[in-house]
Length: 90
Image (cartoon, rainbow, N blue to C red; front, side, top):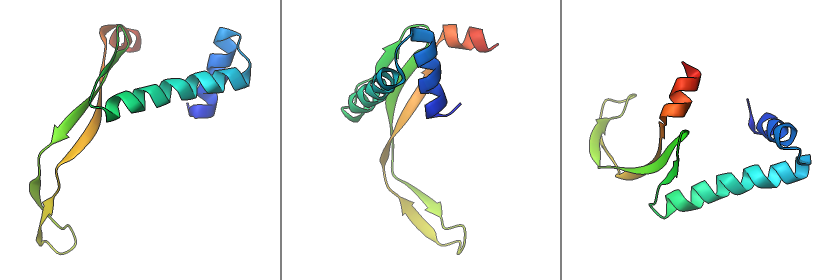
């Protein structure tokens, strides 16, 4: 399912117009993105938790040349599925 299909499914399930469903889905994505960029987490009980993980700098190798290189520290978004989501998939 891609984003347009998700918007269509939300519109059908909620009875909203397609443009209102688009605003709702975009609003959810924007809110999750802004919250994670602040370093906070978004916890949706039964669905899962979006959080931020910090990765330390490390040393790796260039796959083409084999030369050692430094990999910068970074912040990565992370999602952990909740029990309700896990149970519905299994």
